[in-house]
Image 1 (tube, rainbow, N blue to C red):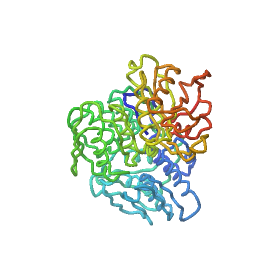
Image 2 (image 1 turned 90 degrees about the horizontal axis):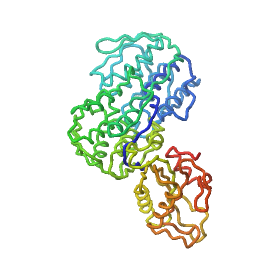
Image 3 (image 1 turned 120 degrees about the vertical axis):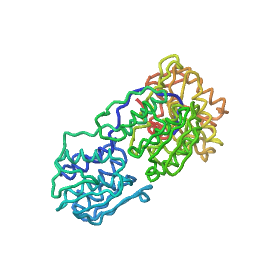
Image 4 (image 1 turned 30 degrees about the vertical axis):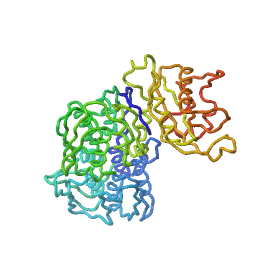
Length: 505
Protein backbone atom coordinates (compact mmCIF):
# COMPACT_ATOMS: atom_id res chain seq x y z
CA UNK A 1 0.00 0.00 0.00
CA UNK A 2 1.14 3.55 -0.76
CA UNK A 3 0.28 6.52 1.48
CA UNK A 4 0.27 10.09 0.23
CA UNK A 5 2.04 12.71 2.36
CA UNK A 6 0.22 15.44 4.23
CA UNK A 7 -1.46 15.81 7.65
CA UNK A 8 -4.98 14.46 7.94
CA UNK A 9 -8.24 15.66 9.44
CA UNK A 10 -11.39 13.77 10.29
CA UNK A 11 -13.15 11.81 13.00
CA UNK A 12 -12.76 8.19 14.06
CA UNK A 13 -14.18 6.00 16.77
CA UNK A 14 -11.46 4.11 18.58
CA UNK A 15 -11.51 0.40 17.74
CA UNK A 16 -12.50 -2.08 20.46
CA UNK A 17 -9.62 -2.85 22.79
CA UNK A 18 -8.39 -6.32 21.95
CA UNK A 19 -6.75 -6.49 25.39
CA UNK A 20 -10.11 -5.89 27.08
CA UNK A 21 -11.98 -8.08 24.58
CA UNK A 22 -9.73 -11.10 25.23
CA UNK A 23 -10.38 -10.81 28.95
CA UNK A 24 -14.15 -10.38 28.73
CA UNK A 25 -14.42 -13.31 26.32
CA UNK A 26 -12.53 -15.64 28.66
CA UNK A 27 -14.37 -14.47 31.79
CA UNK A 28 -17.75 -14.99 30.12
CA UNK A 29 -16.68 -18.39 28.80
CA UNK A 30 -15.75 -19.49 32.33
CA UNK A 31 -19.13 -18.22 33.48
CA UNK A 32 -20.86 -20.42 30.88
CA UNK A 33 -21.88 -17.47 28.70
CA UNK A 34 -20.85 -18.08 25.08
CA UNK A 35 -22.86 -15.21 23.59
CA UNK A 36 -19.80 -13.11 22.75
CA UNK A 37 -18.17 -15.87 20.70
CA UNK A 38 -20.02 -15.24 17.43
CA UNK A 39 -17.55 -14.13 14.73
CA UNK A 40 -17.70 -10.49 13.73
CA UNK A 41 -16.27 -8.99 10.56
CA UNK A 42 -14.79 -6.16 12.64
CA UNK A 43 -12.83 -8.53 14.89
CA UNK A 44 -9.08 -8.16 14.88
CA UNK A 45 -7.20 -11.32 13.95
CA UNK A 46 -6.13 -11.80 17.58
CA UNK A 47 -9.66 -11.52 18.97
CA UNK A 48 -10.94 -13.86 16.25
CA UNK A 49 -8.30 -16.38 17.39
CA UNK A 50 -9.50 -16.20 21.00
CA UNK A 51 -13.10 -16.70 19.89
CA UNK A 52 -12.09 -19.73 17.80
CA UNK A 53 -10.16 -21.30 20.66
CA UNK A 54 -12.88 -20.74 23.25
CA UNK A 55 -15.50 -22.19 20.88
CA UNK A 56 -13.27 -25.25 20.45
CA UNK A 57 -12.79 -25.57 24.21
CA UNK A 58 -16.54 -25.53 24.67
CA UNK A 59 -16.81 -28.77 22.69
CA UNK A 60 -16.97 -32.06 24.56
CA UNK A 61 -13.56 -33.34 23.58
CA UNK A 62 -10.52 -33.87 25.76
CA UNK A 63 -8.03 -32.90 23.04
CA UNK A 64 -9.44 -29.91 21.15
CA UNK A 65 -7.44 -28.29 18.35
CA UNK A 66 -6.84 -24.66 19.29
CA UNK A 67 -5.83 -22.48 16.36
CA UNK A 68 -4.11 -19.47 17.96
CA UNK A 69 -2.97 -17.93 14.68
CA UNK A 70 -0.25 -15.41 15.50
CA UNK A 71 -1.85 -14.32 18.78
CA UNK A 72 0.46 -14.62 21.75
CA UNK A 73 -2.29 -13.24 23.96
CA UNK A 74 -4.65 -16.04 22.96
CA UNK A 75 -2.15 -18.80 23.68
CA UNK A 76 -0.83 -17.36 26.93
CA UNK A 77 -4.30 -16.63 28.29
CA UNK A 78 -5.99 -19.87 27.26
CA UNK A 79 -3.27 -22.48 27.87
CA UNK A 80 -3.64 -22.49 31.69
CA UNK A 81 -7.43 -22.21 31.40
CA UNK A 82 -7.56 -25.29 29.17
CA UNK A 83 -5.41 -27.22 31.66
CA UNK A 84 -7.62 -26.12 34.56
CA UNK A 85 -10.60 -27.54 32.67
CA UNK A 86 -8.83 -30.87 32.23
CA UNK A 87 -8.24 -30.43 28.49
CA UNK A 88 -5.14 -31.52 26.59
CA UNK A 89 -5.22 -29.25 23.54
CA UNK A 90 -3.26 -29.42 20.33
CA UNK A 91 -2.09 -25.87 19.64
CA UNK A 92 -1.66 -24.44 16.16
CA UNK A 93 0.66 -21.46 15.84
CA UNK A 94 1.40 -19.19 12.90
CA UNK A 95 4.02 -16.60 12.07
CA UNK A 96 6.54 -15.87 14.81
CA UNK A 97 4.36 -17.22 17.61
CA UNK A 98 6.29 -20.49 17.84
CA UNK A 99 9.47 -18.46 18.53
CA UNK A 100 7.96 -16.24 21.24
CA UNK A 101 7.96 -17.09 24.97
CA UNK A 102 4.95 -19.31 25.68
CA UNK A 103 4.03 -21.94 28.23
CA UNK A 104 1.72 -24.83 27.49
CA UNK A 105 0.36 -26.55 30.60
CA UNK A 106 -0.03 -30.34 30.37
CA UNK A 107 -1.62 -30.09 33.82
CA UNK A 108 -2.11 -27.34 36.35
CA UNK A 109 -2.60 -27.79 40.08
CA UNK A 110 -3.30 -25.56 43.08
CA UNK A 111 -0.26 -24.29 44.92
CA UNK A 112 2.55 -21.82 44.36
CA UNK A 113 3.18 -20.65 40.78
CA UNK A 114 6.40 -18.70 40.35
CA UNK A 115 6.79 -16.37 37.38
CA UNK A 116 9.31 -13.77 36.25
CA UNK A 117 7.48 -10.45 36.11
CA UNK A 118 9.61 -9.05 33.32
CA UNK A 119 8.81 -11.47 30.47
CA UNK A 120 5.11 -10.95 29.79
CA UNK A 121 2.21 -9.94 32.01
CA UNK A 122 0.09 -12.23 29.82
CA UNK A 123 1.34 -15.27 31.75
CA UNK A 124 -0.05 -13.67 34.93
CA UNK A 125 -3.39 -13.01 33.25
CA UNK A 126 -3.69 -16.63 32.17
CA UNK A 127 -3.18 -17.82 35.74
CA UNK A 128 -5.62 -15.28 37.16
CA UNK A 129 -8.31 -16.86 34.97
CA UNK A 130 -7.30 -20.48 35.57
CA UNK A 131 -6.46 -20.69 39.27
CA UNK A 132 -9.90 -19.69 40.65
CA UNK A 133 -11.57 -22.75 39.10
CA UNK A 134 -9.12 -25.27 40.63
CA UNK A 135 -10.09 -27.30 43.70
CA UNK A 136 -7.59 -25.61 46.03
CA UNK A 137 -6.02 -22.27 46.83
CA UNK A 138 -3.04 -20.91 44.90
CA UNK A 139 -0.43 -18.21 45.01
CA UNK A 140 1.28 -16.34 42.17
CA UNK A 141 4.77 -15.30 43.20
CA UNK A 142 6.94 -12.99 41.08
CA UNK A 143 10.65 -13.72 40.93
CA UNK A 144 11.39 -10.32 39.36
CA UNK A 145 9.55 -6.96 39.27
CA UNK A 146 6.27 -7.03 37.35
CA UNK A 147 6.26 -5.04 34.10
CA UNK A 148 3.17 -3.91 32.18
CA UNK A 149 1.30 -3.74 35.49
CA UNK A 150 -1.57 -1.92 33.81
CA UNK A 151 -2.50 -5.03 31.83
CA UNK A 152 -2.67 -7.07 35.03
CA UNK A 153 -4.91 -4.37 36.50
CA UNK A 154 -7.22 -4.81 33.51
CA UNK A 155 -7.39 -8.53 34.24
CA UNK A 156 -8.09 -7.94 37.92
CA UNK A 157 -10.92 -5.56 37.04
CA UNK A 158 -12.51 -8.17 34.75
CA UNK A 159 -12.19 -11.18 37.09
CA UNK A 160 -13.36 -9.18 40.11
CA UNK A 161 -16.27 -7.89 38.05
CA UNK A 162 -17.12 -11.53 37.43
CA UNK A 163 -17.30 -12.14 41.18
CA UNK A 164 -13.86 -13.72 41.60
CA UNK A 165 -11.76 -12.78 44.62
CA UNK A 166 -8.03 -12.13 44.22
CA UNK A 167 -5.89 -10.73 47.03
CA UNK A 168 -2.69 -8.84 46.35
CA UNK A 169 0.39 -9.54 48.49
CA UNK A 170 3.88 -8.09 48.43
CA UNK A 171 5.34 -10.46 45.84
CA UNK A 172 2.22 -11.47 43.90
CA UNK A 173 -1.38 -12.61 44.38
CA UNK A 174 -3.39 -15.06 46.49
CA UNK A 175 -6.20 -16.79 44.61
CA UNK A 176 -8.82 -18.85 46.39
CA UNK A 177 -9.93 -22.02 44.58
CA UNK A 178 -13.43 -23.41 43.86
CA UNK A 179 -14.71 -20.00 42.73
CA UNK A 180 -17.42 -19.39 40.16
CA UNK A 181 -17.28 -16.78 37.42
CA UNK A 182 -20.54 -14.95 36.74
CA UNK A 183 -21.54 -13.41 33.39
CA UNK A 184 -21.11 -9.68 32.79
CA UNK A 185 -23.57 -8.97 29.95
CA UNK A 186 -23.79 -5.26 30.74
CA UNK A 187 -20.03 -4.73 30.38
CA UNK A 188 -18.96 -3.62 26.90
CA UNK A 189 -15.49 -3.64 25.38
CA UNK A 190 -13.57 -0.42 25.93
CA UNK A 191 -12.15 1.69 23.14
CA UNK A 192 -8.53 0.83 22.45
CA UNK A 193 -5.88 3.36 23.48
CA UNK A 194 -3.14 1.47 21.63
CA UNK A 195 -5.13 1.73 18.38
CA UNK A 196 -6.08 5.35 19.06
CA UNK A 197 -2.39 6.13 19.60
CA UNK A 198 -1.81 6.19 15.83
CA UNK A 199 -4.42 8.91 15.28
CA UNK A 200 -3.22 10.89 18.29
CA UNK A 201 0.32 10.68 16.93
CA UNK A 202 -0.90 12.02 13.56
CA UNK A 203 -2.27 15.00 15.46
CA UNK A 204 1.15 15.52 17.01
CA UNK A 205 2.52 15.68 13.45
CA UNK A 206 0.10 18.39 12.34
CA UNK A 207 -3.17 16.50 11.91
CA UNK A 208 -6.60 17.34 13.28
CA UNK A 209 -8.36 14.05 14.03
CA UNK A 210 -11.11 13.73 16.62
CA UNK A 211 -10.88 10.33 18.31
CA UNK A 212 -14.08 9.24 20.05
CA UNK A 213 -14.86 6.21 22.21
CA UNK A 214 -11.99 6.38 24.69
CA UNK A 215 -12.30 6.19 28.47
CA UNK A 216 -9.99 8.29 30.59
CA UNK A 217 -10.74 5.94 33.51
CA UNK A 218 -9.38 2.94 31.64
CA UNK A 219 -6.73 0.68 33.17
CA UNK A 220 -5.09 0.31 29.75
CA UNK A 221 -1.43 1.29 30.18
CA UNK A 222 -1.34 2.63 26.63
CA UNK A 223 -3.48 5.55 27.83
CA UNK A 224 -0.10 7.08 28.71
CA UNK A 225 0.24 7.99 25.03
CA UNK A 226 -1.96 11.07 25.47
CA UNK A 227 0.24 12.58 28.17
CA UNK A 228 3.48 11.61 26.41
CA UNK A 229 2.42 13.21 23.13
CA UNK A 230 1.22 16.36 24.87
CA UNK A 231 4.67 16.99 26.33
CA UNK A 232 7.16 14.41 25.09
CA UNK A 233 10.05 14.12 27.53
CA UNK A 234 13.65 13.54 26.53
CA UNK A 235 13.61 10.08 28.12
CA UNK A 236 10.70 7.61 27.95
CA UNK A 237 10.47 4.28 29.75
CA UNK A 238 8.23 2.00 27.66
CA UNK A 239 8.53 -1.08 29.88
CA UNK A 240 4.95 -0.56 31.11
CA UNK A 241 3.50 0.34 27.69
CA UNK A 242 5.62 -1.39 25.02
CA UNK A 243 2.91 -1.40 22.33
CA UNK A 244 3.07 2.37 21.85
CA UNK A 245 6.85 2.42 21.37
CA UNK A 246 6.75 2.21 17.53
CA UNK A 247 4.47 5.21 17.07
CA UNK A 248 6.12 7.23 19.85
CA UNK A 249 9.48 6.71 18.18
CA UNK A 250 8.08 8.10 14.91
CA UNK A 251 6.90 11.27 16.63
CA UNK A 252 10.25 11.54 18.43
CA UNK A 253 12.02 11.26 15.07
CA UNK A 254 10.11 14.29 13.77
CA UNK A 255 11.46 16.55 16.54
CA UNK A 256 14.70 18.50 16.31
CA UNK A 257 16.26 16.88 19.35
CA UNK A 258 17.27 13.58 20.91
CA UNK A 259 14.83 11.23 22.62
CA UNK A 260 15.94 8.21 24.63
CA UNK A 261 13.68 5.16 24.98
CA UNK A 262 14.41 2.83 27.89
CA UNK A 263 12.75 -0.43 28.99
CA UNK A 264 13.01 -1.87 25.47
CA UNK A 265 14.08 -5.44 26.27
CA UNK A 266 10.70 -7.12 25.69
CA UNK A 267 10.24 -5.28 22.40
CA UNK A 268 12.69 -7.71 20.84
CA UNK A 269 10.31 -10.66 21.36
CA UNK A 270 7.11 -9.23 19.87
CA UNK A 271 5.71 -10.09 16.41
CA UNK A 272 9.13 -8.99 15.21
CA UNK A 273 12.16 -7.46 16.87
CA UNK A 274 10.56 -4.05 17.17
CA UNK A 275 13.78 -2.41 18.31
CA UNK A 276 15.61 -3.44 15.13
CA UNK A 277 12.53 -2.83 12.98
CA UNK A 278 11.99 0.74 14.14
CA UNK A 279 15.68 1.43 13.81
CA UNK A 280 15.37 0.51 10.13
CA UNK A 281 12.13 2.49 9.67
CA UNK A 282 13.41 5.68 11.29
CA UNK A 283 16.68 5.47 9.35
CA UNK A 284 14.71 5.32 6.10
CA UNK A 285 12.71 8.34 7.23
CA UNK A 286 16.04 10.16 7.63
CA UNK A 287 16.43 10.13 11.42
CA UNK A 288 19.51 9.00 13.29
CA UNK A 289 19.23 5.99 15.60
CA UNK A 290 21.64 4.52 18.13
CA UNK A 291 20.71 1.19 19.70
CA UNK A 292 22.26 -0.53 22.70
CA UNK A 293 21.01 -3.35 24.89
CA UNK A 294 18.97 -1.04 27.09
CA UNK A 295 18.47 2.13 25.06
CA UNK A 296 16.97 3.26 21.76
CA UNK A 297 18.26 6.78 21.09
CA UNK A 298 16.56 8.83 18.37
CA UNK A 299 18.17 11.85 16.72
CA UNK A 300 15.19 13.67 15.25
CA UNK A 301 15.15 15.27 11.80
CA UNK A 302 13.25 18.41 12.82
CA UNK A 303 11.38 18.49 9.52
CA UNK A 304 9.77 16.34 6.84
CA UNK A 305 10.65 12.66 6.60
CA UNK A 306 11.98 11.05 3.44
CA UNK A 307 9.50 8.97 1.47
CA UNK A 308 10.20 5.69 -0.28
CA UNK A 309 9.65 1.96 0.25
CA UNK A 310 9.30 0.76 3.84
CA UNK A 311 9.14 -2.75 5.30
CA UNK A 312 6.46 -3.59 7.85
CA UNK A 313 8.30 -6.72 9.03
CA UNK A 314 4.89 -8.41 9.06
CA UNK A 315 4.11 -6.50 12.27
CA UNK A 316 0.81 -4.65 12.60
CA UNK A 317 2.17 -1.90 14.83
CA UNK A 318 5.16 -1.27 12.57
CA UNK A 319 2.92 -0.95 9.49
CA UNK A 320 0.65 1.58 11.19
CA UNK A 321 3.59 3.52 12.62
CA UNK A 322 5.01 3.87 9.10
CA UNK A 323 1.62 5.22 7.95
CA UNK A 324 1.76 7.83 10.71
CA UNK A 325 5.20 8.92 9.52
CA UNK A 326 3.91 9.09 5.95
CA UNK A 327 1.66 12.00 6.90
CA UNK A 328 4.72 14.21 7.41
CA UNK A 329 6.89 12.81 4.60
CA UNK A 330 8.13 14.77 1.60
CA UNK A 331 6.94 12.17 -0.95
CA UNK A 332 4.94 8.97 -1.29
CA UNK A 333 5.51 6.22 1.28
CA UNK A 334 5.03 2.61 0.17
CA UNK A 335 4.48 -0.08 2.84
CA UNK A 336 5.33 -3.58 1.71
CA UNK A 337 2.65 -5.39 3.74
CA UNK A 338 -0.06 -3.15 5.13
CA UNK A 339 -2.49 -6.08 5.45
CA UNK A 340 -0.78 -7.18 8.66
CA UNK A 341 -2.56 -4.29 10.44
CA UNK A 342 -5.60 -6.59 10.62
CA UNK A 343 -3.98 -8.37 13.55
CA UNK A 344 -5.13 -5.59 15.86
CA UNK A 345 -6.90 -2.91 13.77
CA UNK A 346 -8.57 -4.29 10.60
CA UNK A 347 -10.15 -0.98 9.57
CA UNK A 348 -7.13 1.26 10.14
CA UNK A 349 -6.16 1.85 6.51
CA UNK A 350 -9.79 2.16 5.44
CA UNK A 351 -10.28 4.86 8.09
CA UNK A 352 -7.13 6.62 6.89
CA UNK A 353 -8.34 6.50 3.28
CA UNK A 354 -11.58 8.27 4.18
CA UNK A 355 -9.86 11.26 5.77
CA UNK A 356 -9.32 14.66 4.20
CA UNK A 357 -6.07 16.59 4.27
CA UNK A 358 -5.74 19.01 7.17
CA UNK A 359 -4.24 21.83 5.07
CA UNK A 360 -7.40 22.30 3.03
CA UNK A 361 -6.39 25.73 1.73
CA UNK A 362 -4.02 24.02 -0.71
CA UNK A 363 -7.04 22.69 -2.60
CA UNK A 364 -8.82 25.99 -3.08
CA UNK A 365 -12.18 24.27 -2.66
CA UNK A 366 -13.95 21.21 -1.33
CA UNK A 367 -11.92 18.00 -1.26
CA UNK A 368 -13.73 15.49 -3.46
CA UNK A 369 -12.68 11.84 -3.19
CA UNK A 370 -11.79 10.36 -6.58
CA UNK A 371 -11.20 6.63 -7.12
CA UNK A 372 -9.05 5.54 -10.05
CA UNK A 373 -7.83 2.21 -11.42
CA UNK A 374 -4.38 1.83 -12.96
CA UNK A 375 -3.01 -0.89 -15.22
CA UNK A 376 0.09 -1.62 -17.30
CA UNK A 377 1.07 -4.53 -19.56
CA UNK A 378 4.19 -3.01 -21.15
CA UNK A 379 7.59 -3.37 -19.51
CA UNK A 380 8.84 -1.91 -17.28
CA UNK A 381 5.33 -2.26 -15.90
CA UNK A 382 6.15 -1.53 -12.25
CA UNK A 383 8.05 1.62 -13.22
CA UNK A 384 5.14 2.91 -15.30
CA UNK A 385 2.79 2.29 -12.35
CA UNK A 386 5.04 4.18 -9.92
CA UNK A 387 5.47 7.09 -12.31
CA UNK A 388 1.73 7.32 -12.95
CA UNK A 389 0.98 7.31 -9.24
CA UNK A 390 3.50 10.10 -8.60
CA UNK A 391 2.05 12.09 -11.51
CA UNK A 392 -1.48 11.75 -10.13
CA UNK A 393 -0.22 12.99 -6.77
CA UNK A 394 1.34 15.95 -8.58
CA UNK A 395 -1.82 17.13 -10.33
CA UNK A 396 -2.89 20.67 -9.38
CA UNK A 397 -5.17 20.93 -6.34
CA UNK A 398 -4.93 17.16 -5.96
CA UNK A 399 -3.20 14.78 -3.55
CA UNK A 400 -2.92 11.04 -3.29
CA UNK A 401 -4.69 9.66 -0.24
CA UNK A 402 -3.64 6.04 -0.63
CA UNK A 403 -2.98 3.41 -3.27
CA UNK A 404 -3.47 -0.32 -3.01
CA UNK A 405 -0.82 -2.95 -3.40
CA UNK A 406 -0.07 -4.00 -6.99
CA UNK A 407 -1.50 -7.27 -8.31
CA UNK A 408 -0.80 -9.21 -11.51
CA UNK A 409 -3.81 -10.23 -13.60
CA UNK A 410 -4.64 -11.93 -16.86
CA UNK A 411 -5.61 -9.60 -19.74
CA UNK A 412 -9.32 -9.09 -20.45
CA UNK A 413 -10.84 -8.35 -23.88
CA UNK A 414 -7.50 -7.91 -25.66
CA UNK A 415 -6.60 -8.99 -29.20
CA UNK A 416 -5.29 -12.60 -29.29
CA UNK A 417 -1.76 -11.54 -30.19
CA UNK A 418 -1.51 -9.67 -26.87
CA UNK A 419 -3.06 -12.35 -24.65
CA UNK A 420 0.33 -13.29 -23.19
CA UNK A 421 0.93 -9.76 -21.84
CA UNK A 422 -0.19 -9.85 -18.22
CA UNK A 423 -1.26 -6.69 -16.44
CA UNK A 424 -0.17 -5.09 -13.24
CA UNK A 425 -3.20 -3.45 -11.61
CA UNK A 426 -3.67 -1.04 -8.74
CA UNK A 427 -6.34 1.27 -7.33
CA UNK A 428 -5.81 4.73 -5.88
CA UNK A 429 -7.86 7.27 -3.96
CA UNK A 430 -7.18 10.98 -4.36
CA UNK A 431 -8.53 14.17 -2.88
CA UNK A 432 -9.08 16.95 -5.42
CA UNK A 433 -10.93 20.21 -5.85
CA UNK A 434 -10.88 19.87 -9.63
CA UNK A 435 -14.09 19.11 -11.51
CA UNK A 436 -14.59 15.62 -12.96
CA UNK A 437 -14.03 16.67 -16.58
CA UNK A 438 -10.85 18.61 -15.79
CA UNK A 439 -9.56 15.80 -13.58
CA UNK A 440 -10.25 13.24 -16.33
CA UNK A 441 -8.50 15.39 -18.94
CA UNK A 442 -5.37 15.75 -16.80
CA UNK A 443 -5.49 12.04 -15.99
CA UNK A 444 -5.40 11.18 -19.71
CA UNK A 445 -2.56 13.67 -20.10
CA UNK A 446 -0.54 11.49 -17.73
CA UNK A 447 -1.23 8.49 -19.97
CA UNK A 448 0.05 10.44 -22.98
CA UNK A 449 3.17 11.61 -21.13
CA UNK A 450 4.01 7.99 -20.30
CA UNK A 451 3.75 6.87 -23.93
CA UNK A 452 0.22 5.47 -24.08
CA UNK A 453 -0.58 4.54 -27.71
CA UNK A 454 -4.21 4.16 -28.81
CA UNK A 455 -3.82 2.93 -32.41
CA UNK A 456 -5.09 -0.59 -31.58
CA UNK A 457 -8.25 -1.08 -29.56
CA UNK A 458 -7.35 -2.71 -26.21
CA UNK A 459 -3.77 -2.99 -27.41
CA UNK A 460 -0.70 -2.89 -25.16
CA UNK A 461 -0.68 -0.03 -22.65
CA UNK A 462 2.27 1.55 -20.91
CA UNK A 463 -0.30 2.89 -18.51
CA UNK A 464 -4.09 2.84 -18.41
CA UNK A 465 -5.86 5.08 -15.90
CA UNK A 466 -9.63 4.84 -15.49
CA UNK A 467 -11.70 7.21 -13.38
CA UNK A 468 -13.92 4.82 -11.44
CA UNK A 469 -15.81 7.19 -9.15
CA UNK A 470 -15.78 10.91 -8.44
CA UNK A 471 -17.42 11.92 -5.19
CA UNK A 472 -20.30 9.52 -5.80
CA UNK A 473 -21.76 11.62 -8.62
CA UNK A 474 -23.54 10.11 -11.62
CA UNK A 475 -22.92 11.50 -15.10
CA UNK A 476 -23.08 10.28 -18.67
CA UNK A 477 -21.41 12.39 -21.33
CA UNK A 478 -19.78 11.46 -24.66
CA UNK A 479 -16.34 11.53 -22.97
CA UNK A 480 -16.99 10.49 -19.37
CA UNK A 481 -19.43 8.16 -17.62
CA UNK A 482 -19.52 7.93 -13.83
CA UNK A 483 -19.36 5.63 -12.03
CA UNK A 484 -17.26 3.69 -14.54
CA UNK A 485 -19.76 1.46 -16.36
CA UNK A 486 -17.66 -1.73 -16.18
CA UNK A 487 -16.00 -1.30 -12.79
CA UNK A 488 -18.52 -3.48 -10.94
CA UNK A 489 -17.71 -6.53 -13.08
CA UNK A 490 -13.94 -6.21 -12.92
CA UNK A 491 -12.30 -8.02 -10.03
CA UNK A 492 -9.00 -6.30 -10.79
CA UNK A 493 -10.76 -3.03 -9.94
CA UNK A 494 -12.98 -4.12 -7.05
CA UNK A 495 -10.29 -6.08 -5.19
CA UNK A 496 -7.73 -3.25 -4.96
CA UNK A 497 -10.47 -0.76 -4.08
CA UNK A 498 -11.66 -3.06 -1.29
CA UNK A 499 -8.12 -3.13 0.10
CA UNK A 500 -8.45 0.63 0.50
CA UNK A 501 -11.82 0.25 2.21
CA UNK A 502 -13.66 1.81 -0.74
CA UNK A 503 -16.90 0.47 -2.17
CA UNK A 504 -18.70 1.87 -5.19
CA UNK A 505 -21.90 3.73 -4.21
